[in-house]
Image 1 (tube, one colour):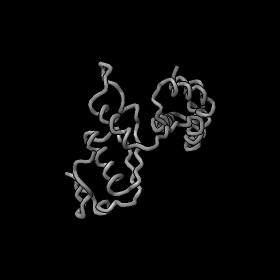
Image 2 (cartoon, helix red, strand yellow):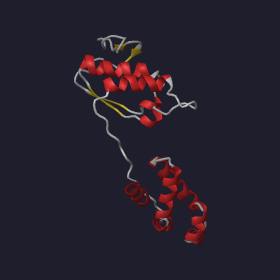
Image 3 (cartoon, helix red, strand yellow):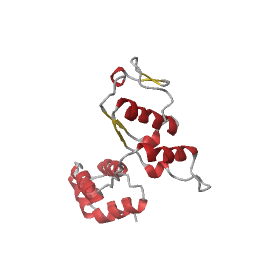
Image 4 (cartoon, helix red, strand yellow):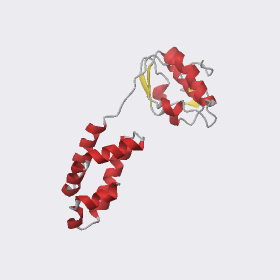
Length: 176
């Protein structure tokens, strides 16, 4: 698959100048994160990854949101990028693991990180409702939930303490 040749001693990898420590990746474990966000064409990225595996005997971990990569266009067909990924993936990727976020555990950790005792209590009381809203949003992005909770704490920090203790009123801010 790789058209650029083997990684050279100068650290040249096809048309890409790699850092010196990658000029000899033999036997290393390399991690490529957020493949779906790569600026390079998917075929090129996978060609480079393949070169590390085939020519340098490196172990490679690819972290990607396959749903995003394989999302069909508006016409229901795969884009060229998606098709390239699908075609090459079969030959290149040995094992696939699906990572599922644990909302319940993450929520507990997010609540513990809240400094304001009134807001921590509010999140604890409204936990089920907040988790339901999050699940219904279909974002499945725990970083987004964490940031929203921190933003809510910041907003509540601008309120008078007497208002922060009114769980029902704070609940109206969160959602229906």
